[in-house]
Length: 303
View 1 (cartoon, one colour):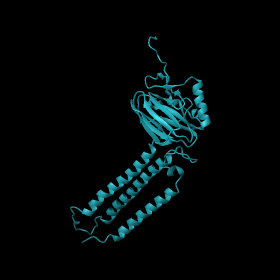
View 2 (cartoon, helix red, strand yellow):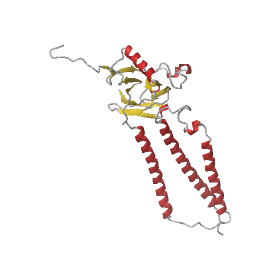
View 3 (cartoon, rainbow, N blue to C red):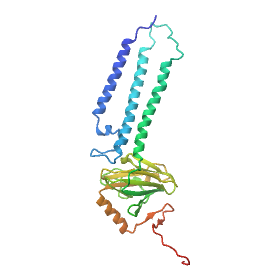
View 4 (cartoon, rainbow, N blue to C red):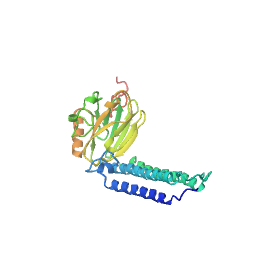
C-alpha cells in the first residue's frame, strides 16, 4: 500500500517552525543589553568609539542571518523526517529521481545570494572603519616589541616607553585602574583625547604583534618593516584594557597596556608630564634608540 497523505504532519511541522521563529524574535526584543550587543564588550552609558555601533550591528546581523538559515534548515530536515518517514503499512519503494533541476538551481542560487549580501555589508562597514580621509587631531605611533609597547605621540613630540609585565599571574583586582578589568597600574598607559580623531601608525620592532583594544571592537596586525594605519574617534571617557592578540613569543601573555580616554585638558597635562621628564622626540624601530627629530648638522672638517 502507498503511504497516507502527510499534509497534516506538514502543517504541524510548519506551525512548530513558525512558533520557534516567533519565540526567538520575541526573546531577542526583550533581551538584556549584553545579549543585544551580541555579548560583545560595551557599556550602557554610551558607545566607546564612533565605530563600535557599526561593528556591533554587523556582528549581530551576521548572527541573525545565520539563525534564520539554521531555523529554516532544521525545519526542513524535521519536516522531511516526519513527512517522508517509512510507515509500517508502506511497502512501496519511493520514486527514484536522478535530479530535480529547480531544486538544484535553488541550492546554487540561494548560497550565492547569501554570500553576496554578507560580502556587501562587510565591505561597506570595513571600508568605513578603515577610512583615513578625515584629518586627524592626534597622530600616535604604536610600536610593538617583545614584550611591551612604546608610544610616540607624534603630534605632541613626546613618547612613552613600556616595560614587560613579568608577573601577570600576580596582578589582582586592587591593581586595576578605576575598577576596569584587565588594567593595572604597573602597565604602560596610552592616552587618547575624547571626541577627537586619533590616527594610529602601527609598527613592530621584532616579530608580528597585534594591537588590540577589546572595548574598541577592533584590532590590527603590526608587521616588521610595514606600517599599518587605523583611525578612530573615542567617544566615551574611561580606562580600558589593551593587549597583543598575536602569539609573539614566550612572554606574550605579559604584553599588556592600558588605554585612558580623557578630556583634552587631561591629555595636554599628560603630554606636559612626558615633556617635563625629558621624553621628547621619538623612539625608533632600531633597538629602541631615541631618534632626534632635529639632528645636529655636522659641517665639513668637524669631528
